[in-house]
Image (cartoon, rainbow, N blue to C red; front, top):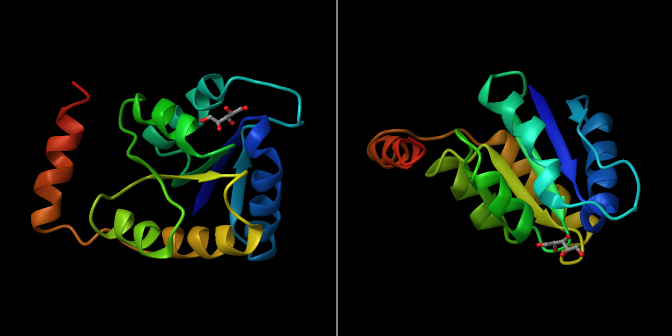
Length: 145
Ligand code: RB5
């Protein structure tokens, strides 16, 4: 499993703490930036990691901005991406189970590192259930075309 990490300046600290958490748990990460607290546009930060997720070069993405919202909006405009902005455990779990979300978006100005780690852990360890939910995800994917 390879996790694609990305953030803007508002999510930089949270991305860094999630990177450490994943590395300490022997999970491979690719960090697509940003690499400092200098201001960047979250729209620019999602392009490459989304391309790599779409092409199977990364398994799942964890993207952070101040609220998690802007970067989720940008990610959801990328083909093949189903991004979910979550701040509670149930949503982070069920967006994998039912939506086959491939990107979790988190707010660096919303969440503490401890809760963020719980959300990341359940997101990356939960599998899509398929079945009737696959029909819906197929329809979501068709909206890309
Ligand atoms: C940047 O200041 C902030 O607007 C951004 O990180 C994010 O919260 C947008 O949704």
